[in-house]
Image 1 (cartoon, rainbow, N blue to C red):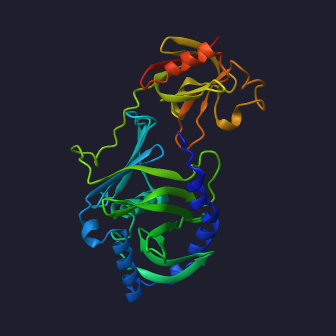
Image 2: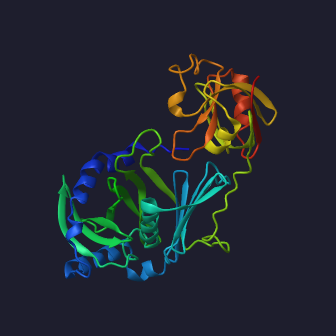
Image 3: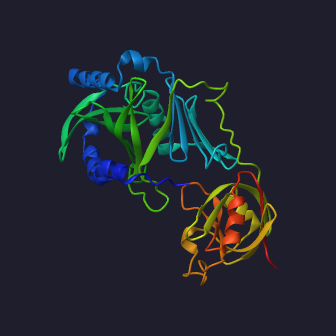
Length: 378
């Protein structure tokens, strides 16, 4: 689920993230008046566009897609963006869509409109990615906010505002590529929503400069569920798209059923650690399913995965499993149903140090869409 980027990518991005975010957020955006675009800002924007591939090549890009970790991004030059999350093709358990001025998300067959600061985030990313990692699709005006030194690196700062957000682009003085976009959105009665988007190790793709790694970091948010830098792969310029590709939030995670003491659903995939014989199977059960089933910490469950039966213990979240709550949760042969430590509220089955024959059997059940059931044992 959560992809660990190579060490070289981490060295490119992570050490300077905190310093750079703080430095960019110190830019006095609040003092910038509307219409205050300067020749220096226009010159910097033109140099950035030229460095990314040139106006002619960029204007010819109507759609751009790429994969980063479990997410596939599809951005268009008209400001639409679709982000699909899956485990292994063809599973898609979540879709986020920016279109027609709104942001919608479907997670495990539960759809809702995204509002507030997070909606602003995705609208800004739609413009940036649709502009092929440049600010060219933002309406402006732009302001040149000076040059900052971050160790050996020098970055020119280009700023603008949109949807109430303050946006700062950090442009490398050496190659004029955007290495960072910082988004700051005021939130009434709370600290501002602050997001840093990092881009590293640019490569040439059909005459366009595309980063080989990206890293999203929300200020004040961290922990196991926050992914590190992710390699960018499967880049496609102007891919052939089926009708309605940028208008639907449909997923294919399958239906789930919940009743008091019981869950039914589908396996979405899985993985294993062969040396330790630890296996993980992802399900399409979310928090609402578990709430309807009424499972409580420590409940003993009879689990059936496509005919394979086993006993598992239920733990609501990552923090509520393990020896602090029920001794021996990770002992050899034990299994548990618990929430995967990420933003997506997806439950998974964790099988600990199984005998070789059982481990091989569980791994054979990780094929997508196989049926799975869990019932509380009386």
